[in-house]
Image (cartoon, rainbow, N blue to C red):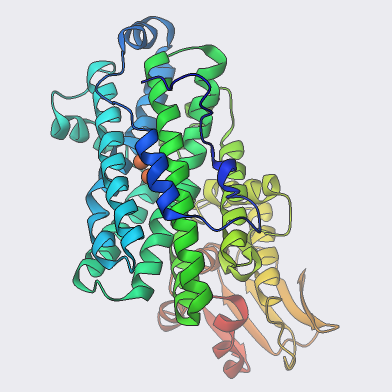
Length: 436
Ligand SMILES: [Fe+2]
Ligand SMILES: [Fe+2]
């Protein structure tokens, strides 16, 4: 539904979401904007969209769009289903009222994607069958993140007075899922469709959704900011949540068989999406008062470098199978160098003052590396240290599995896939040193 002329569409920048300091978000104003910006998912005209889909999209574009929109269809269904416990847990009436409007929004977003997939792409004949048709397209990262949303919101339903849990739920829902995952996807879909003037009905719906999501993210940022500013326990819990889910989020946008054509057919690269997502996330963290340099999984991929470089590193580790479960593990020199660089960065978040000597990695099938403290900083080197205090022996794939949290280091020790020589007590400090 088109807005009356003269009324400017609200965008994320209206809320200063990506600025370190912005005005306090007034929940009543958000409610008013919701009233003003209501729209109809059933009223959109998909006639031209059907023509574009069948006549102007190539078969590869149709396959790629189906995969991409499937993630949105299921994402909208999941967020509509899981928001109700937030309403009971919200500590103020203003928050409860806003959250109630958001449930309506998310249901409408689901109706929109479901209608498009059914009426234009021809998948399914009702809400349930359309969801089922899209289910095989869900990625492993998607399932991990949304399983966690189900788990946490179910816990919130059982413990509605737990404000720390409420802070974690809002952080997962509004900052990670809406801010880090949905926002970049929407941005790139809209950019391509605007440039090509394809799918006008779908584009109109996506513009409405983007406006709704800007309100949702503004709400979430304010709620989390207030809660973690007033409660160190809430702050710690939100950081712990981010450490747990951020590695999964990296695998959400991995296309089938890691085929880059799924995004290239729409004129962008996976790296663009990852960089956009990281920029959005890091700005939002700063906005709520958490420095990105406090988050181990961001520090590991060089949070002080430009987001394009952070995105490149994440994709190298994903394509090597170190993170995510999308491809078989393949560790080459570049991957190993990135793993040790990440270790060095994490170790320097709290550099140890009293390391008794270097720690050596003696790989059975790759060149050795070691870690030493020099001028109060941890430095990693390729090669052999002259007198290591501790030596770890394993094959390079097992070390990559341990670094990628796919193999538990204690289990590797018990099964002798990992062996230690030297000051074994030093090994007890490795997890703290490496942020594992
Ligand atoms: Fe939504
Ligand atoms: Fe939303």
